[in-house]
Image (cartoon, rainbow, N blue to C red; front, side, top):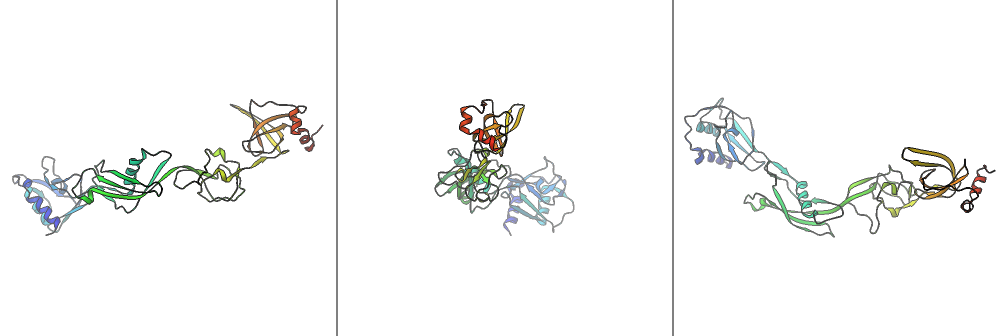
Length: 343
């Protein structure tokens, strides 16, 4: 006789079954299959139509995720024992009952490891990669099936080991304690390139994005930008690969306006934007302050380069005329003459 058959017959012949129920008769139908949601197999798990008052506990259920098969002969014996009026009895029928459960995989145990060590770590999140772990099935209503302790992490190599202990011990040493091993990396938001780009390329805001879970390494002693505004308009000093981090040491300021170039001079304040045309009086990269001359008024202003051909001034900028010492230092008259607009 198989183990499962012995288990079922054991349930039938157990002391809990020896109640005097011969006087009762319950009309019921056999379930086609079913799930067991508790530690105990009940009569209602086998037959449909059993009320709560008629239900009886038959014995322990299988482990979560495991199944038992009950043959037709065993089903008939159970029905007779408990006075179940089972329609369409047949010895050729087999009923399969499966203990409901949820599968715990690498992600579950990786989160436990992170929670165990993250409280003492700063400067980014952690990426835990567990190797060689077989999925574990536990009861679906088990809220805290495992706890992790004994975490040992070599930060130089990234290798770690730990032990996951079952919260509700089963008595099986291998099942109650699971050895975990793998690799832990620190991750942090890093700006990376969207595609491969050549040396000399001038960056725009569509050339990169923030990878919130970057698990690579930045070159020793070098750092990435703190904001996209720090790199837009800068040029690459060398080719870069798609997915590689944006490093400030790989960037050079690109000259966006040159002395004598036509420029847009703009003034911006909340609700107001005023623009006029002018000429740049010096070369300038994005973010640099340069002087420009308003070709209409012939007044010189100081503004910041914020895009190709545009210089933005604010309320602190003071205009000076062509006869000022500042204009002479900047050789503003020469720019006007070169443009053909000299008096």
